[in-house]
Amino acid sequence: MFSNTIANSDQMSVMSRVLDDYCRVHGILNEEERETVARLVVDLFGRGIVSESELTEALEQGLSSRAA
Image (tube, rainbow, N blue to C red):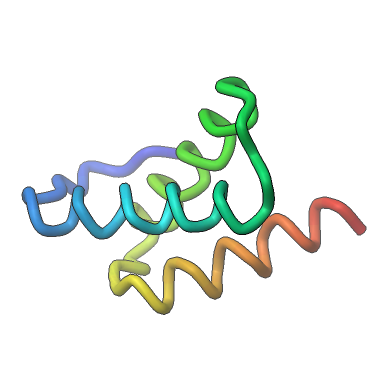
């Protein structure tokens, strides 16, 4: 799941924003559920998806396919 990719402070801010926005939009308040989403964001980053818009899109696609 995790690669050797190291995020700088700007990238950490992007990942944090994506996580917060996703959880706000989807009403995720439970800490366990937030951690699950956070792990997915980090996984996507480790796969080279680093822009805010790409992370958001991939997160939406990834979680919606899990719900299907």
